[in-house]
Length: 523
Image (cartoon, rainbow, N blue to C red; front, side, top):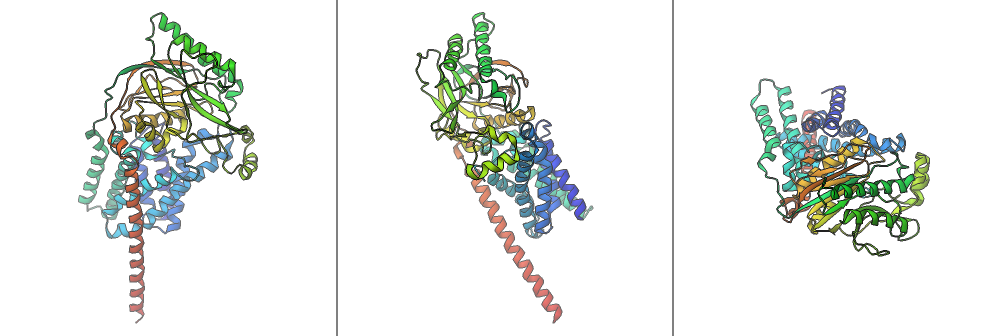
């Protein structure tokens, strides 16, 4: 394949991967993107494989992460895009590296593609500074039959299935191009791709069998979108108080059932209610009116100067004046360069040179150390704050610590609807993965409920106020994915490493054979 053709395939691969994610949601395009990239890099030199992977990654991540440039300018967005695309460059290099092995044993090629995708995501999910898992193949499959596979092996197994399907498509296309008369192996590969795609239909999703509880989500909205959404912090808090009080009037009038618990989003109170008596009194007003505990997303000062905490507070309806909440969850995975600056003395001057919005990050958010399992009325709620829903370990540890219901508190006021919908797709996967009814509560949308089969209910609009009420079931049993924890990903990544080693041996033998042939010819 000529390099211009390969480059065109890499661009098409990036576009196909993009089309699989919200706002587009064409889940079946993801394996096509995998196949196109695999075809583009097969048999190429390592440098070309890396370059083609970088090209595909840039086309993919640029539009996918475009919501990051809405309020901070293009430079941070471009840097993040190129950094994330670098992981696909590593993948392209790895796929080119295993090409000789795939040429000798063609059946290994689809397996190598699938395993290397999982390994690439495992690395990207962790490094550096805790990683950034946005754009995992699994997060594009919320409407796909393969979503049910999450209950067996979590997001890594879903990614494996998508990439394996793409690998089988690539194998079929390669063989047809090589010999159009040889149809049996391509037909078998296509049949295998269909089987893998539909395999999730054979996996039953969990149905929580616990008590039914009535849950209310309050989406209070903000005065204006953007990084200065909290410039009117009192207005944001008042919006959530007013919406909760209005819900209480509807409950008293019989228009709505009385909730057992209420969930406010992240940043519902950017005025620290533990230090500001006015903010505490406002939340008291809402909690007493509704007669149920409220999970309040709040920004807290400290514990030291120059530090903040992103918290979920359980605010009881009968709180004594001046009493501190007895239950609190602190976000365990603050976002680097958004909630804290790594290596601040070095990075801060650079950040200020890149964007004039760096001045907004005056304090560093301190990470919590414990899973967010909080008791609200009859339910043990697993609190997950914003981007934490993208991290396997944060959600899994919350469920394994006793969460019967998952609540994702988020603030999308600094982004746009595409980011909110991408995040909702992650909530859907987590609900299936752990067999838990779930919800997402946002300041501006999209908020909604997700049952344990991954179905979204009562989704709100974007940039609007909303109050949602629904009955959910509490769950106590563990899915296989919850029980296995990180082991499926670890095994798959270890297998990928083994393939890379085997490919290195194959390349060395090939080089030795070429030298021997040249020496024999010279003789």
